[in-house]
Length: 134
Image (cartoon, rainbow, N blue to C red; front, top):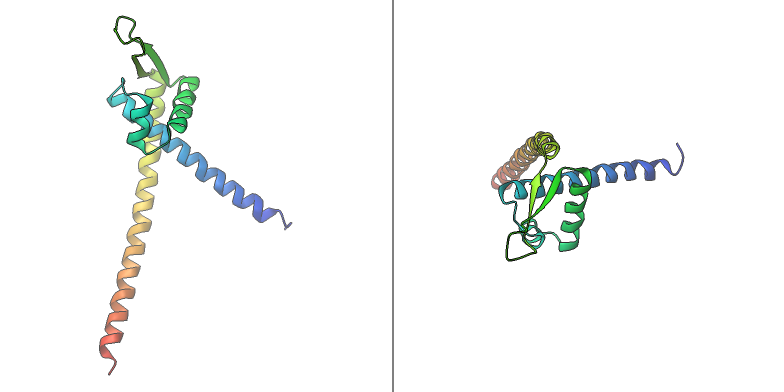
């Protein structure tokens, strides 16, 4: 094994984690827009706890992928009024992301539950040994 192999493996893991986070943000943005298509990017950023720049980058990526389309309300007095609509491809991809997100959260739940049970056993054991000492 070369000296670079651990670095490459760590980078692959970090890249996978970055990709998962990226997809999670896309999932959340699409969910917000599906519920409220006229939501501004500033409102999305606030709801997601993201910067406005990161939110804009995500929206632009979704538009570029063809998962979202932008509709302008030309009849509106506010010429800046837009709605973000999920395209049929966006709806299909959101369904896939929903499934992946749910699977990941279920895996996290199982691991967290096991960790909590281990900590409870450890705390109980420590308490019992402390009580039995003279």
